[in-house]
Image (cartoon, rainbow, N blue to C red; front, side, top):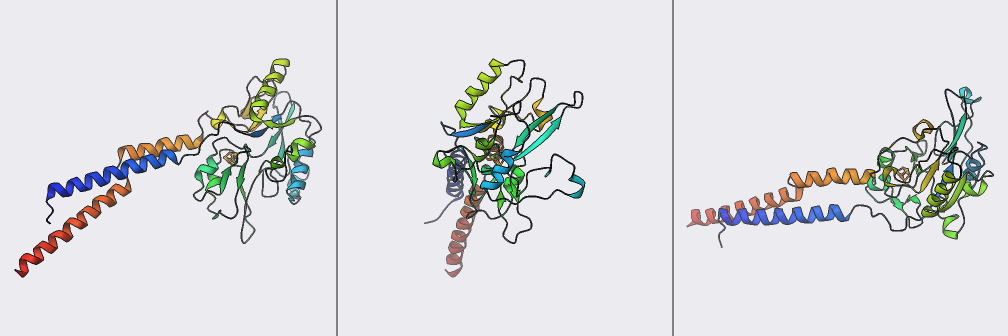
Length: 302
Ligand code: SF4
């Protein structure tokens, strides 16, 4: 049976179109799903934090993390280590207001985003958004590409640079050791000032609103993390005159980073021919040419 040009174009168009539909459907379905119940999280109230670092010590203890000796030039500093590291998954940092000189202590750790950029960036599914609300890392799947480190808007994941087989390390919300057993995180349990509240995210937002309403003169009325980057399971309150950006919490938009990249991805598939469509067209050309050679060969033989 021969194949004419009209038939060939039809085959290529149909297979290309089917590939387009299948691909755009897959791209839409494969995006991370935001659960109806976002699970547990923490409310870090910087108006109550006294900077004792009990949470930092508790985190090191439960995760068996090494003590980091301060660099000689950092020996006099309160902020030592200066940032999260493979051995520091929770860090209290002091932010001093330039005009008043007043200090605000702010806890740094993974925000446990509702729609995590790290999970979206990971090619092998090594970053997992658990039902508990925790974002955890699976060492059995990780291939060490470090895309999660680039994707995280808060620079949270750390890499064990000095090890032959390095891990990605970060706060895991005490998921296995405490939360799955019905216990609060180690840091929240250790805090003597009620500056870290552990609980269901919805309940934490209610507590935050109650605290703001009870002392409007003491609080910035915004709850950081309620909407930023699509919402996070770790939320923050701060003092009335303190701007969140000045205490290390940038004014990010409310759309989750994976939703932004998804829009770009879909745009690409909408306006350009996806690779599978090109392969389908090439397959059609190869089939057409092979048929033509066979027919021509037959004619030559005759
Ligand atoms: Fe992932 Fe960074 Fe969000 Fe934590 S803060 S869940 S590491 S994107």
